[in-house]
Image (cartoon, rainbow, N blue to C red):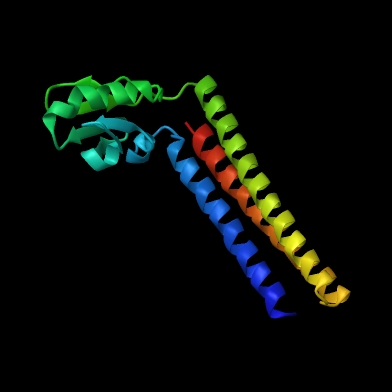
Length: 187
């Protein structure tokens, strides 16, 4: 196998791995009954005119499985953080006691659990599409090498290898989904 083909395959494998890492990060944002600081990831707060991630302007703790505490470093930011959490539409209603924001994470209903499973499936499908796009791109790059004089046999072998790699990464995405689905549906 030529160096160019090996480089294309290594690059494809790395990109597919990144797609799985992204999927895992998205799964962390989908709560499965237990409170975690990652649930507030992606909430942006207007911090003196600059949109900043909530984790950069406050300390976020989970003292127990049903509660998240947001303690801003600047107490004047409490109402602004409160509005940002509400605007993020996460289904949380923060309680401001003047010192911290206390977010009680409600128990999941059966309907809400099904919605979360559906969202997890959508995230998994997006990851699979990304993996398939990486496969297509890698195959196109390998086809270009054929025009540059690389033997057709090597091209066919490389295409099969990329397909095996794609199948393996899609299977890993499905395993991640199964684990997340089990986690969400477990009461």
